[in-house]
Length: 196
Image 1 (cartoon, rainbow, N blue to C red):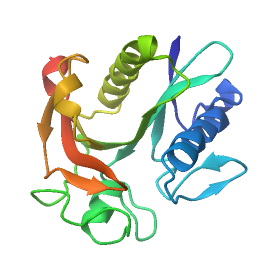
Image 2 (image 1 turned 180 degrees about the vertical axis):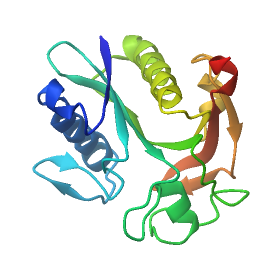
Image 3 (image 1 turned 180 degrees about the horizontal axis):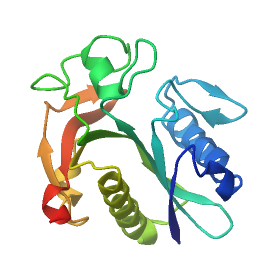
Image 4 (image 1 turned 90 degrees about the vertical axis):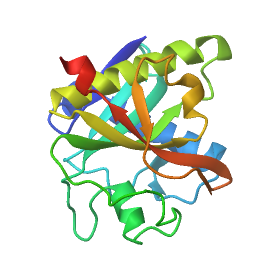
């Protein structure tokens, strides 16, 4: 099992890994979760997959995707869009309620957004915890590598059950709410302590 953080600067060094990750996102979010998301050529993507973002991928040596995640700076801007959580709060996204945060969405170089987090349903139950831990460790490392001390993420509201298992300090940033039939909540993953 390997972890790789992709960017537009290094995608060319990793063959089909980026395309395979977008295909795995299509399989998870569109086929499995039945979300109505943009897609082409069997790949899921949206307006936040830009050169400003990074993609954390857990995979095997053959490029089989086990898990993935996208990191986007909260300072990003592309047309009318910034980052998913903030744009939802601003009422730009129909699929996510605008009252998902207690306070105004942050815009700061030290705060990034973590989105499109998934663990492939092909990963056996006996390996899921390990794969998820690898993903979160690489996410923390990648976030710290770009100067982030925290990441906002919209997660399944059951996050308190597993946060300590992956050794990340998490704080609720908004109410638990049903989105696409699943209880979700915006959470801050705080990396400042582990950076010292």
